[in-house]
Length: 65
Image 1: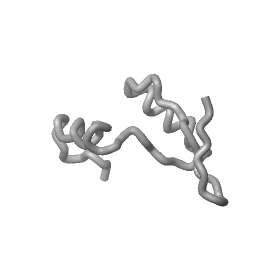
Image 2: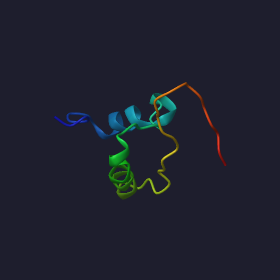
Image 3: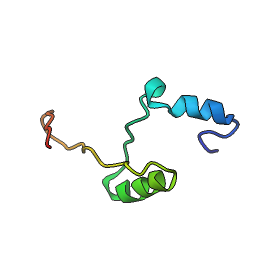
């Protein structure tokens, strides 16, 4: 079963709108990142990008330009 099977287009748009669902972030295994980005780009999200990673260790946030 696919995630949006049975949903009308307006329902899918509502569920994936970052203003209502936080849909801006997607997590995947590092080895799948390029395939996930390619999928987003073929769907019209040309600016999709990797913005971070999870690593083992002490929790911290590093912001880089």
